Each structure stands twice: as C-alpha cells, then as structure tokens.
Image 1 (cartoon, rainbow, N blue to C red):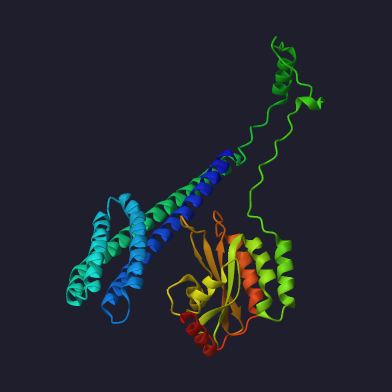
Image 2: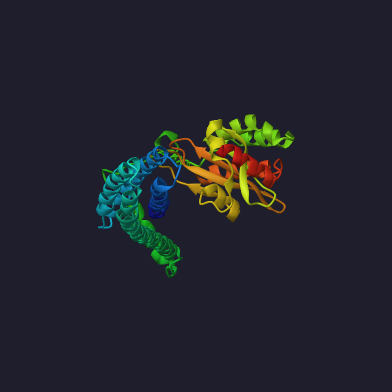
Amino acid sequence: MLASAGLGYRAQAVELSLAAARQDGAAIDLAAEESLSALHDLRGSMTAYLAPNQGSEFWSKRVGTTLDALKQRLVSLDSAMAATGGSLADSLDSVDQLAAADRRALQYVDRGELILAGDVLFTEVRDLLAAVNEQVAGGRQVLRHAADRRVAGIRQEQLILAAAGIGVWFLAALLLLPRASAPAKEPGEWRQELADTINKPEPADNITIDLKRPDLVEPPQPLSAVTLPTVDLTLVAEICSDLSALTDAGALSGALARACTAIGAKGLIVWVATNDGGSLSPVSTHGFDERIVKRIGAIARADANMTAEALRENAPRVSPATATAGAALAVPMCGPTGPVGVLSAELQPGKLADEACLAVASILAAQLATLTAPVPAAAVERSAESAVS
C-alpha cells in the first residue's frame, strides 16, 4: 500500500507536469503566431505610407505600436529558444533595423520624395521582413518539436509508473498466495511441544500489554481528503432558472454578472450568429467597456481567433493566461441545427480554465442557446458600417 501510494503521488505530479508542458507549448505557439501576424501587419501599414490621401501620422503610430509588440513577443520566443540551443538574436536586430528604416521612409514621405520612400519600403524593409518571417517560422517548428519531445518523455514516465504499479500488485499477490500446509504431527509430538512451552522460563525483560486498556491502542489516523475543484452548483442552478424565464437576450446583464462569479470571469460576451452563420455579433456583455465592444464589432466566421474557431469547430476553445491577461475561453451555444452563437469569457488573473470552469460555461451556453435567435446578415453589415464610421 505504501508503494502504491508513492506511485500514485508521483503519477499525479507527472500529470501536472504534462498539463504544464501542454500549456507552455500552446503559449509559445500562440506567441509565434502573433509574431507572424504582426509582420504581416507591418508590411501593410508601411506600404500605406505611399497611398494617396492616407496620412502618415496614423500609419506611423500603428507601425510603432506593432514594432513594440513584435519585439516583446520575439524576446519571449528567444528565451524559449535558448532552452533548445537556438536564438532569435538576428530577428531582434532586424526589428531595430526595421524601426530605423521606418524613420527614414517617413522622412522621405514628409518631404514628398515618394520614390526614395518606395525604394526603402520595397527593398530594405521587404528583405528585413522576409528574414524575420523565415526565422520566426523556423523557430516555431523547433519549439513545437521540443514541446512534443517533452510531452513524449512525460508520457513515457507515466507508462513506467503504470508498469511499476502493476509489478507491485503482482508481487503482493504472489506473497498472499496460500502456502503448502505443514504435515500433520503425531500426538506424541504435540504433547512434547506443549510440555516444552510450559516448562520454558519467561525472560526477565518480557513485557505484557493489557489489550483491555483502550489508551494503549493507537487509533487509526484519518486519510487525507482529496482536494477537488469546487463549483457552486446552487448559484449555477439559480442562473439557469433565471435564464429560462427570460424572453429577450437584451435583459441578460444581471444573469451574466452572476455567471462571471460562477466561473471566476472578469467579463462575458454573448455572441449570436447571423442567419447564414457567416459572422457573430455581440448581443449582451458584462465586465467590458461598451466602446471596446462596439469597436470590435462583428466577427467573421473565417477570422483567426478563438471565438470564430469555437463557432466553426462547434467545440470549446481555451487560451492560456499571459503576463498581461488572464486565461480565456469560448464555448459554442448549440441549437437543433448547430451552433447559434458563442459564449466567450476572460477569466480573472490567476484563474485557470480548468475542467470545472469549462463545464459550468458549457451549462450556461446551453441555457443561453434557448434565448438567442440568429441575427439577420443585413443588420450585421449596418452595425459594421456604423462602427467603421
């Protein structure tokens, strides 16, 4: 039993290591994906300098913000690459060169020397962006292989622990097998052994224990309780009851506020799909500034984000916490014909999107699906136009 307990403790530690390895791999892959997207955005923003009537002030600010974000992500990727023996130092140098090239191009644009600005953008900047893109893509593959090897090593250790557990119990079974009984003794042998026992003197240091005294018997120690994720099922039931009594998705604010408490969320957004399922629109929110929600606007089904992916795949999606934001999740709201919307949430800092949290979010999403109706595509287009204006 002690050996089994030790193996079980080690198996739990290995399982936690496996979850951490998967989470780290997902975070690194997300940073690489965001870096590649930032490079694509830089190419378009710098090219906009040469477009007529665009104004360089807006695009220059955007380029500066994108360069800062790109450098931060490359620093995190470089620290991850250091563990594999690689480095992204060349890419970091290229980012500094991109900033210098951007300043020269802006000077040419301000002086009206568009030919010189185009020469900088379409030769020097193009080559720098291509070099950084190639190195980041290669580093992403290296980090993926390293994460896969780490997960494979943990899986192998789990197999070894399982084999050790089977071996321990097999050995215990062998020890517990009944042994061959001793041959029957003759009556004379029994009498002689009894006489020897009676005549044998007791040793001076013999100690007698009175079994009738309960204070000499040590009571059994209680087993440690296993800590399980706690969920306030009463609160979840109350929220579902309130949602079942609603007839308008616009009156969800009170229920969403308590839903945030139930899953430990910082904010929630209820997205409803259009009739053709081509996009999602926010119909009710809690915990987010309305200006930010209006600025986000509608989300296309093909967009490269977690909410659109949950609608396309009809499956929950989770993103790990970062240095500046908590974990996030997106759960599809399913109707008779498929997903009719998505419930997305940003969790509080330090709150993990564990199985209990995801289960409660799925329950709430299933209840919300009965309240939502597809948004007409024309209404989504008008909303997007108003957001742009």
